[in-house]
Image 1 (tube, rainbow, N blue to C red):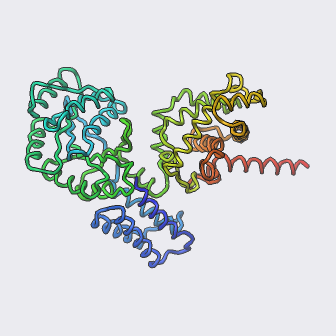
Image 2 (image 1 turned 120 degrees about the vertical axis):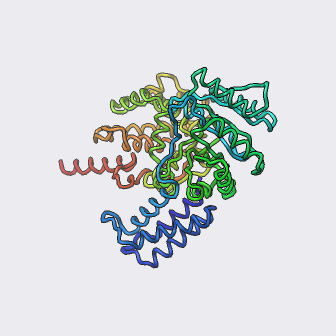
Amino acid sequence: MFESLSDKLKKTLKNLRGQGKLTPEHVDAALREIRMALLEADVNYQVAKDFVGAVRVKAEGQEVWKDLKPHEQVVKIVYDELVNLFGGTSSRLVFTKQVPNVVMMVGLQGSGKTTSTGKISKWLADNQERKPLLVSVDVYRPAAREQLKVVGDAVGQSVYADDTTNDPLTLVKGAQKHAQELGYDTLIIDTAGRLHIDDELMVELEKIKEETKPTEVLFVADAMTGQDAVRSAEEFHNRVGITGVVLTKMDGDARGGAALSIKQVIGQPVKFVGVGEKYDAIEPFYPDRLAQRILGMGDVLTLIEEVQSKVDEEEAQAQLQKIVNNQFSLEDFRNQLRQFKTLGSMSKLMKMLPEQMTGGMSLSDEQSEEVEANLKRTEAMIDSMTIQERRDHSVINASRKTRIANGSGSTIAEVNQLLRQYDQMRKMMQQMNRGGLFGGLGKRMMSGMAGGLGNMLGGGGMPGGMFGGGGNDFEGGGEETTASLAKRLKRKKRHKKKKKR
């Protein structure tokens, strides 16, 4: 998402580098480019105009950060205004002591209400220890209520159904009573939609809202409809009074103008974004993190949360201990590959890393698929080894290599390449360990493991190695990736040897 806007903003801001002092002409040129980038990203015209005006006021004002270079000051201003444009802070769902708390899902037909109802119920159960009950009051669309039942079963959440009535108000009353009796603390109502906004739809929603007194009314919009989504949100807000927005299909919208405009136009925040078809592919909307992604600063916090939720912590700690003790085997590496694959596509992960770590490199969907194919091939080669070979790669001789290659559908050259890269990675880990670089689990650990994995895959089709050769520092942190650390440690060793002579 936001690929087009992100590329143009980064290019514009990059052009300001090297300027010892920014003149009004420099600022004007940059602001023209920023304005065009916003409009091409389908941002509302007035929103784009106000955004550029706010950046101009700050850029031409007296506010100066002593520690920042001129172009960095503009980047900081643009970042601050992007965060402000998105809503400033993350807005979580509001819950009270009322039982059950009611969440109404509203929007046009085809926007993704039913799927979003399931996704949000799963997210609340997994992340906020809520106990949701779902109910569909869409009595018009064929099989709409059956569809919610299918979604509910898929996400493991209960769905209230009453086949004896087709009255929306009777359904919500029954669902509320059922939730109170069985201890469900959250009732999520999947309401009916239309292909267009009409008075009949709005009257029905107003009645449901009056009956259930919801704590949240979430408008679900298809991000790919752009400004149409913004206009629909505005009309729903004027009639029903929405409290937040759920933007679906954000992963398929390269422009992202709806997300950029919606908060400023209707005054209500985006609360969730759908980023894929799977039922766990929904994220809370964090304005600061999204601004960082757009400007190439990465989104390490979201990546860490992904790792924490999908990677077994005890196993990760055990693997770290093996690295420290120089016991990291091919078997451990295979386990790490399997954990790595649970985090999602390589292109998605690359977007979460700062440009300083990736060398500004991004992956297309085709390249991402190629990398994932290489991961599978690497795993297949390790699977074709015996337990002894996986735990001690030094026993692998020519005849064993032939057997491994035949068993995994690869070539002897590919097996040799795997072993060579694995050996290089182990040596780098040893050097990092001797340098005391595994003392913490923060950026250094992420950098080291990412760089090591990059070296393992570097010959398998990734342009420039997984992270652009691994020779870049983190932004402002001075923490290096594995390849640059290894080179620096080797230089230190050579320097010490020369001194001894």
